[in-house]
Figure: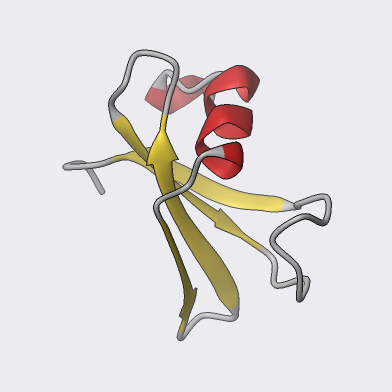
Length: 66
């Protein structure tokens, strides 16, 4: 997260206000939602069956970057 200038607060906001939640072929769930500054943040988490459950974050990236 540090390498991509993403804070825990950015991740929490993106997961709370996500606009998209999709399963990926690599056994994770990708959320897309707003970071604190309004940019779209992509957050990959381990699947847990519930959007409300605590998440284990695998990776993060700002929209438009890998």
